Length: 321
Image (cartoon, rainbow, N blue to C red; front, side, top):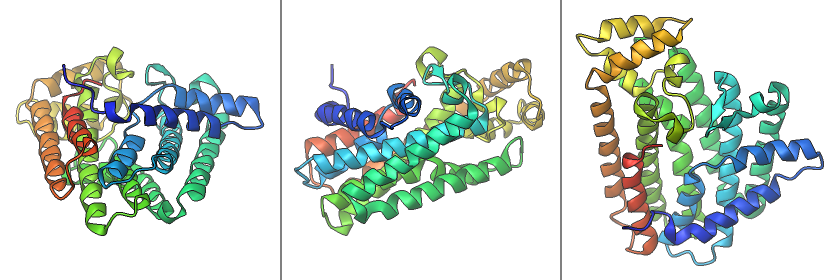
């Protein structure tokens, strides 16, 4: 049996966890508890992993800086999830109650703001030269979410609109994490571009698979109910492709444009999507982005870290959660 893609950095990822828990301690015990509730709920830790692996792939040796930078990225990412869950009125995240459901909306907003501040402070202390990467990525996340709101319950959304949304929501932060790892290793611009492009493309693939799992996934594995995106009217690629189907598309358009969606509507919509070739097309599209990502690594020297990045790319499209 082959080793997991992250096996060569398991020790470093454990240190990421320690740093996050430590740096999110506050003088207020409840605020500390809330922040640690979020990071303790788990997650794939892809952003710190990309930072650490990219650093190692370009010859970086002292892992402490990319570990701390990776922790900062994960703290900031976790903060965005708090705000996303409030915005989407989500109730479950990673198999647990979302923060605003476990506590209150007002306190959850404050906790998210606090985590943003702590993440940026950690970055500013450890690697001020790469703060622009995370600032740009954070701005892109906000813009992506804003565009997504414009297309909720709108059947006129196109694949290009969806790619614009997920580029901001997901791929730019993946790219920034890798570029930060390369930058703190003081590698040249060709490595910065290669690893940044690699991570941007696997970020797109990751989000496409994530959105497909909202249609096909097992809630026990994914940690959230199937059909959540449909309830929220999010214009995901499985919905976009399925609405193009000549037989089932027209009815799906009707369901997607409804603002007051019932669970019966969601169940019907899921059946319609599964009756089309949408899921197959989505997975093929994700594979295309992964293939493109892998080609981006051609200039990167062979190493255990490059191998892990390649294995991560394949994991992205084979995962079930």
